[in-house]
Image (cartoon, rainbow, N blue to C red; front, side, top):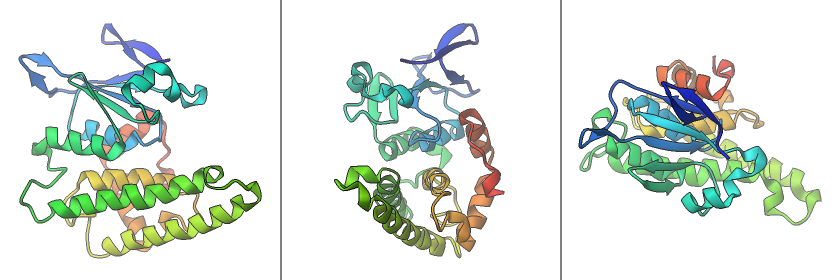
Length: 242
């Protein structure tokens, strides 16, 4: 089920990234295990693990063979979707939950505002908007057969979704008119989550790059060291954002 190779003298699955400052408890390295698929919903957590300098292991879940529905994987993630994060022997799923968990384990990185900070509710607002609105609309657009029992209506579903996605992107574009990042002048996990969804949105009729402020923002983020490194690992082409 998992693709493996040998790095650093021990067998790991697919790819393993090692960093200088691993999280340590009782003098033992606590390793994050991210079950992922390239350019999937695991991309945002992958960005965060790289950003915080965590020691983590990537385990490729082969969607082509439907491995996310295997009995072994369903023990970790009963929803049968990607991603799953295992940390300290606890498995959690849903990309936003994983992102929040990583941020709260590394508060020194400032990827989530601290309790009491006026930006904290805005963090949850934008993360919820990205997940519940933009990502949800993208899923209907790319899997329209799940939302109709009449195949002849699929083109209509796709066309309608292109409009809904453009509406969501327009709201984000307005937020970025006077802000460097979604929460203002500070990079947060929301920005990594947005970059993931923006990449998925490129084929849409009104792609993110047709929105002035959003396009400029994505151009800047595409040059961020973490974005470049993780996209290189996952084989994601950043050329469209240049």
